[in-house]
Structure formats: structure tokens, C-alpha cells
Amino acid sequence: MKKLTATVAALATGDHGDLGKVDCTSLDLELVGIVRDRHRSFKREAWEGDKQPEGSERRNERQWSAMSTEEISDIEKVMDLKEKLTPSVLGVNICFEGLAQLSRLPKGTLMKFPSGAELIVEEYNPPCLEMGQKIASTFTKNSGVPLTDFEFSKAAQLTRGLVGVVEVEGRIQVGDEVTVIPYEHPKWLERNEVNNVVNLLKAK
Image 1 (cartoon, helix red, strand yellow):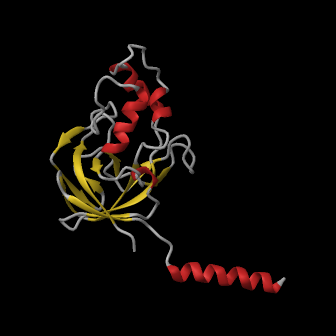
Image 2 (image 1 turned 90 degrees about the horizontal axis):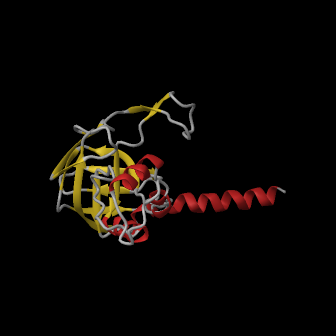
């Protein structure tokens, strides 16, 4: 099984009504989510674009969010930003260093921390217009050209990071080395799928 390693570069939590969070040095994880975080819950309301009708109650697959320092740097360059983007401004709980392709990790990927805490990836976190509007109103370009509300969505289209749930409770700290185990289909399942296809073809 392929494993990757990375370092926790920054952490943030909180609920401050502007999509942002507050920097901190550690996060306490419980099965219901991150302590003192706005997304701490087993369930949430569905919004426009979800699989369920807007406003209906559903499982919360967004207990935490993560990006990498490499992805954030790429977004800054594409947007030609004069100021530095930070994980807390972007509303990200965990920022890793050493995972340049973090956003491409598949659903089911496991992240293991020294305390025993574990996170599991649910899905990619697409950029939203509200964050683009926030950045456009507070950041500037090196060129001096005003930012538009849509530039963040375009720049972060493939690098906005991931969301997921807590698999095992524990504490995450800045500086932790994390072991990342990307999800892979079990070999026996792949073999079984091939055999099923062969049998179907024989039946015809």
C-alpha cells in the first residue's frame, strides 16, 4: 500500500461569520468534528447543488477542510496577489506542507497523526463565490488591476483542497508529521470485477 508523508504547517478553527477562521497551534478532534469549529456536527443542512433538496437534513461530510502550502502558493501566483493568502483567511482547518497534489487525493484516503488521531477524505472542496468576493474586497494584485469576484474560483478550480470526517479521535499539532494512505481498490476486488466481466461476456 502506497504511503505519503507530510507536515502540519498551520491550523485554524472557529466560527466568525465571514468564512474565515482563527490560527491556533493544535486541534482537538472528536467523532462529531473539531472542537469549537463551525462545522462540528454529525449532520448539516443541504444547500443548493447538493444531492438532496436544499434545506433537507443530511450527513455532514465536511467536519474538516484541508489545503497544502503548495496549493495556496499556486493560487497566489495565478491571481498575482500582493498579499499572502493564509489558511485561516481561506477558512481551512489544516494546512499541510509536502502534499503538492493534495486536492487530487481520492475519497477514502486516510491521514494518520502521531497522537493516534485519524482523518478520512470524503471529497474535493470546490471554491465558492462567497470566498471569491471576500478575497476581491480585501486583497490586491501586484499589477494594481482590481480583483474580480470570480478570480479566486478560476484560480482555485483544481487546488481548493479537501473535506472529510474524523475517523479516530485525538489531537493534531503544528509540526506533526502525518502519514497519508491514498485509497486504492483492494486487489481481490479488481480481480473479482474482471472475472464478472468475463462471465458476462461468456453468457452472451
